[in-house]
Amino acid sequence: MGTGGRSGPRPAKGAGGAVSGPCRYRCIECNEEAQELYRDYRHGVLKITICKSCQKPVDKYIEYDPVIILINAILCKAQAYRHILFNTKINIHGKLCMFCLLCEAYLRWWQLQDSTQNTAPDDLIRYAKEWDFYRMFAIASLEQTAFFIGIFTFLWAERPRTTKRKPHFILLLKALLLSSYGKLLLIPAVIWEHDYTPLCLKLIKVFVLTSNFQAVRVALSINRKLSLLAILSGLLLESSTVCLFQRLEWDVGSDCAIYKSQDF
Image (cartoon, rainbow, N blue to C red):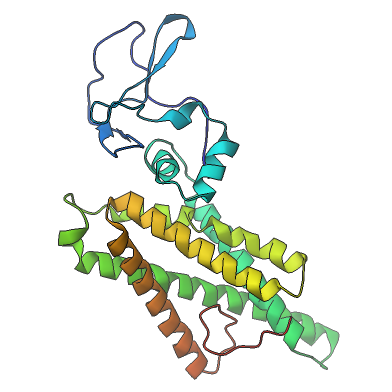
């Protein structure tokens, strides 16, 4: 998720004055806006900018290794999330979302194939299996869309209380997509099949929801209560979507399903 190393604007060399223009960055400690992350002096000498509000470095992670940043993000530290969301340029949101959906679709497809027995000819079996994978991908996409819609609807209804500034829903969407990286753990959980696989899948679900909770809180600068209610609203709408699919007698294989087989 994170990209370490040095980043930030490069003003003119020397101990020049302040950088002109709108604020582009955020302090990872107090969330105040900042115009630069570091000042570039002659001969490659760099000095990290100190926040005028909290008197701490605006972004200490610009000198950290990406692995350290990733570990801090896994631990759901708000500072790491602010660094990733505000002080780096990451454009993998769409690719990460697609890959996570493929992982989830594969898991559901694998569960479906493991619980069904086909006696049809080989060509029909291959066609049916391929169609089942596409169907699981579509269902997983719809459920995730419902989850996001539930979050956005709640935050839109509570927008006078969420933030003093106008909510940046594009930033929130990117934050939610990035914070869903925990779904990548679904594939190892399936490959290393074990008696505790159902428990592992539930723990992965909890981890993803925890990451989403922190992403909402950091992206909109809201308190924990509103962030938790937003996640619960998204989860409620997602569960309602799953119930609708079940009433249509679709085998969705979702973690939000009221009833499903746990035979692995």
